[in-house]
Length: 537
Image (tube, rainbow, N blue to C red):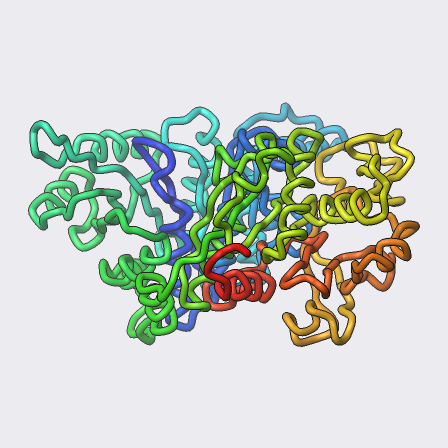
């Protein structure tokens, strides 16, 4: 069949969980045997979030084809177990960039370029790219922002036009709103939802399904009232209760029969029931861990956990499959120095040094690596975390006290971390790093080989700087093993120290490939190693 299109909008306030609801519905449809694609429309003017500070936007997610995207794409991949691409994330910046480039080429035949039809036509074209390949039964599109935002209006207008052009049997609208509970009055309030739907109606869009975010169970009578005043079917008013973990949301949406409602709206009869047994087992195990494992995450953006969203979710996945709860302790690397490190990280059964950019907090990360290495505490570094591990070893084992990355100090005589040759003449910052999936050949007999169980993997990258191979022979003499290498470029992808209890670091970002039903092996092994010690020696 031709792809059916589902659009998810939000009202009242932001951060209601549109992405999670969209991913949950996608998971349920997938579990019924349908093929599903999911995408995000972001209303900001950046072409992509690549140059945004993590405090501004949270984590930048990287797809296998090298697109830098919104963090919601991470949820999509973790829930569905599929790879997204640059077609799964569209920003206003990219839309306008395309339209302006087309205008400069003269492709509009001298017409005045306007939001309608030129911007909306480009939005519609982007939305339909996934459906045009005819690989998917459903394309679910999350529209960022909140209904009523000026930035979101072109997107809402575009999907209104699509419904007119494709027919009501092929397009469905889901609107997510908030139902607040007023404690003083002891009442649930429907007015915010009514006003939000009214705003949506003013744009010409009538929602087919309402998902109501609430902290209290919504009585049937309350739902009927909302259905009546918002002009939707009573069975199409679905509640989304607050739950302890996002991984319970698909099960809650299944209980609320959201997938059934959607299929009924599309007049698709008698599809198989959604098989969510493996998912249920995951959620059940997450609720009943056999032990707690304390892991210290040393980073530069720890005040905003969303900056490490994929890492945190990968720890949840790995914890469940190791039958433990991974308790993450955040440590601001700026506050770590040689005098305080042992007291600061005391009690940690594992230490991760997280990714990041720039000079701030780097010395604290290097100090944390040294503490983990000398204390024989399981260590895992990612990207800048690996680079800090190399710098630490060069300083403290090779005696190069001024060893540094050329990103931090371009004038250091010992650039053990240096900019890649392919990056040296790049001037534009956005979207120009080494991005996306690259092959890594793993050394047989190494810890990495034991973890992966194979000699070749493909992992995702986002960096400009790399281990300087001129120093590799010296580093190997003091115990470092380059256990993963890109054969084409000879860039080192994984390092480890065999003499240590568990010491491994990767230049790539393994967190981007960890999913609910397939945790990443590096996270699995790190959590297992940390769980095997009850106290720090």
